[in-house]
Length: 170
Image 1 (cartoon, rainbow, N blue to C red):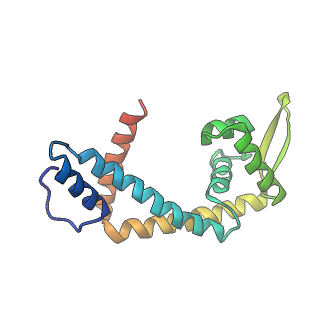
Image 2: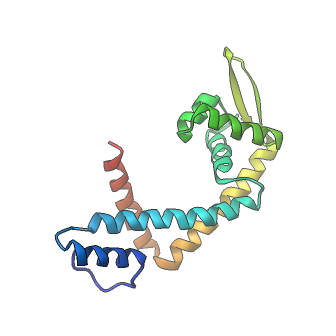
């Protein structure tokens, strides 16, 4: 561990301290970073689940609707494009699309440019719902972020995480 100003202790500190006792030769800096990233992801993920549940959708279903919304008008993509963007199997995507179509949030129709293909299109109801849900999700994230960091530090953290992500996705 490197020398840093004293910060409030968290469960990751306890794990690192235990490793320091039994394996003082280990540099646990990476464990500190990724342990906290994982814990943050879980904690915020649970909050996001609750935020989206108010709209009758799961986080995975939100991701489908949000991907269609971000694609711009006419808010339509192929199931393959959705699967690739969301890193889902076609089987996993089919289940999400079935549920969202039954709820009237999207519709599947033949692709006019490919007789064998389908287009998945966001309905007006789906667009309205995802617009509300994205606001609710951002409110949860903003509240958590601003409770701990000012805008400058939040920006620094975003920059550092972008660098780390880029290095791990090469």
